[in-house]
Image 1 (tube, rainbow, N blue to C red):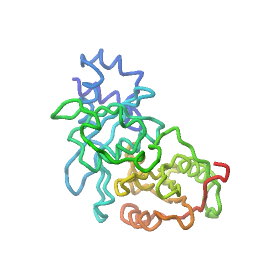
Image 2: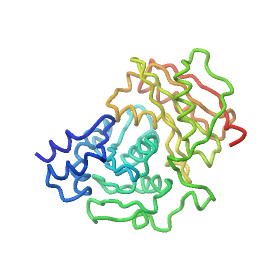
Image 3: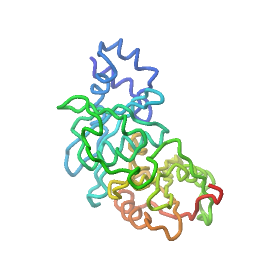
Length: 289
């Protein structure tokens, strides 16, 4: 009965509204929001797409700003590389970033791996993150990642949904619709790329005209960063869509950037949506920024 009730509360984009939490706790008899988040983990695991490992990982995070509960899960791509894989915690924190949210409480179906701990460490406010470890109980990220290395060690600020970097278009694909360009510029403005210093984002246009975007999130350790295509695929999966629905993609990038996502985006798209067309848009940060 409890699982049915909490599953029914999951709204569009696999988010449970914070406003519904008090009533949901009263209806289910769950003790607190931590218990509710743990009860949502099976639903988060069902969101996973792990055709290679068959190992479903779920994560549920609370948005500090609204109390919304956001679901995340792991994604794997047959024919791709291990680097293409998206971990559940990466899914969740990337999704929260795109929604303008900061995660302060996290429930997981399996203890976060070192890769995910490093990824979560990139975000502003991570020092206040509490993780509901399935074996050890509540832990801070510092407990799980002592002597951690992060953006402050390189003199950088952590990834924040409040950050906004205006961009100027240099050259856009002639066939790209204005609404695609507008959404892409908005996504690029929230990219977190302090190490490569070149914001990157992608806009996916689906066969029904829906536009989904994703922005790059770099990491102080480089490898655990989130490429823009994977960030957009997270939103696609959260909305219950299929990779085969991708019709066209436009990648926004800075010409001559140290980190260039064009080749890797084209490769992964050719695997998951072989009929999709990939175009590129050149931009640069606004001179006054």
